[in-house]
Image (tube, rainbow, N blue to C red; front, side, top):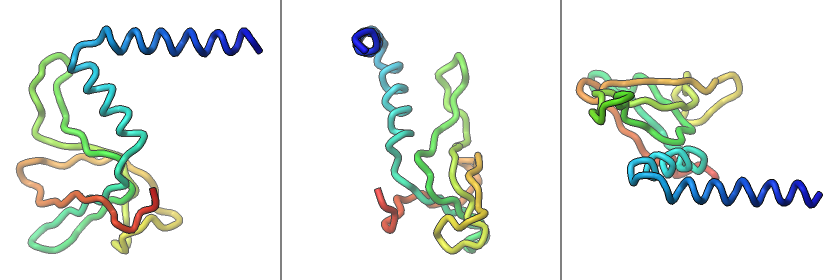
Length: 119
């Protein structure tokens, strides 16, 4: 038991030391990954011709794509959420969590925090 506690303390100390040794950008990335765990339970609605055509619910976060080695943002966003197939605004049994992407330039969308979600 003492060995387990010592191992946990050691891992925590190493994690804190690594965090303080990171650049600001690395710390921001860590912060965004932590936000993925806490999330906003967002809703993404996609419109075409002024009509709602697709809705994703229970989204933790939308991310802007970026190059692997360059610092240039790509012109699309992505995330994970439950595809609301019947457009009723909630995740029903049988509706699954999916990965999605959409263009920043040509997609009419609204992303908002679901006021009915339980945090």
